[in-house]
Image 1 (cartoon, rainbow, N blue to C red):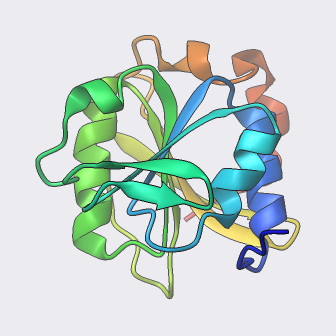
Image 2: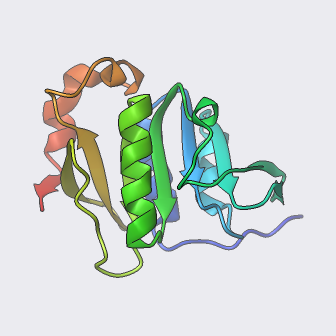
Image 3: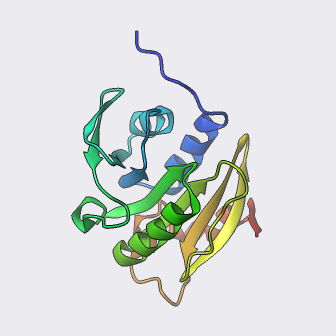
Length: 165
């Protein structure tokens, strides 16, 4: 039996993502812990992991990619690009990438280092035991990314747990 390292609130983070996104999601900077990615895959999402080197992580393939010079084909079709504890520079690069492919961005910061991403509104989300920042493309920039969210008409329900930050 394989043991995976857990992340506090990881189950709740995976629940939030699975309830609000469908299809493909991408974890940037996968590192050495696949807890959230495994939970998302178990909930039926197509999960792609990226990091500086290609490898297997808990049975999931990690694609080699540099977020500062990303291969766009890896991210096209993703409704969400997320990362756990990324540094500020990486968050900014994720925002640039998400704007190009029409995805939302989710960041679970280590401390209080959270970027302002141009073209996105930033919300602090407290979902059960998980706290994270969700960056949603401003409606003036939003072409078709809402179609990849699970239920775009339910933004009032989703917004009920979001706090402007």
